[in-house]
Image (cartoon, rainbow, N blue to C red; front, side, top):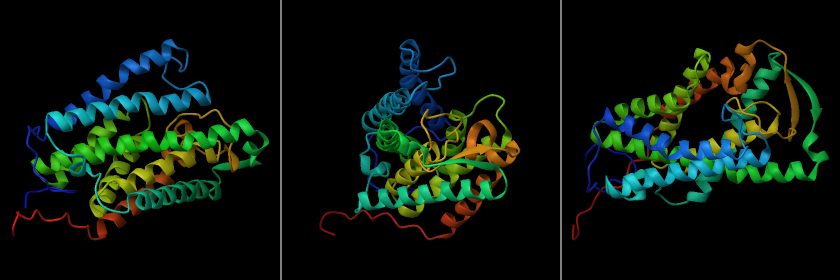
Amino acid sequence: MPNMIYEPSPHRGWLPLVWLAPVICILLVGLSSVPIDFLMEHWGLVNAKGDPLTALAFCLFLLLPFAFMAAATYAWSRYVERRGLETLGLTGSGRLRKFLGGLGIGIAMIGLAILAIWLAGGYRAEASFPAFASASSLFWIAFLLPCFAFQSSVEEFIFRGWLLSSVTRRWNLVAGIVATSLAFTFLHYSPHQPLRVTCLSFLFSVFACGWARRANSIWGIMGWHAGWNWSAGVGFGVPITGLDVHLPALLEKLVPIGPDYLTGGFDGPEGSVLTLAMLVIASLSVFALPANEPPELVAPGA
């Protein structure tokens, strides 16, 4: 069988060269989302750096650009590579169960990372359950969950779905993981960010690729990514990838008091060396587990 993951139906169109696929990925994401970013700035929803200014703006930030990214990636896979969605990781049974299982694990893992930073002296607890003092805050926190689920699922569809499977088909899984992680890190890179933040972006992608490879689908990692982002963003009043959701904390308001290498500084817990260490362990774990094999192609009448 050729090198591939997920459902092994053959592609009937043009599959890009290994070195070209990450470039196409970056162009698909950039060309489809940048016009929406300009519109959101024109409408006063984001500041000059592209950061959402309100909870409503944050929801739109998670929905509008990512909808266009998903459409562009689907169009490429459908009309250029001529592949079905099942070859991009949207395959298998028990899809909702896998998504919800991943969601729970993602919430638990970011909670564990934040707890570790807290116990190490990185945070000071300031208030418990402050969001419950406002019904509107609880509404936006609840509404952010499907928004984060959509945004995270689109990212997984693009990177661990399309790009990983495309490069793996062209060469092998190792090349697919490296190409996917480089493209993911490039698109999440900001000038002057600490090296540990860049390393965490790359390592997160490696971990997500390992999860997708083991599960032979992206449903679980889509849920994990959503749970991680949502819980980090609304649970503790700390930044998520350097962004503020502009809402009171759902569980505990934490104030950073430790050094940036411990708390993550501007980037929040995703920039902490403790989170980085946890993802190293998680990545080693998923690659140590055996992968679910994709179904064999059976010829008619065989």
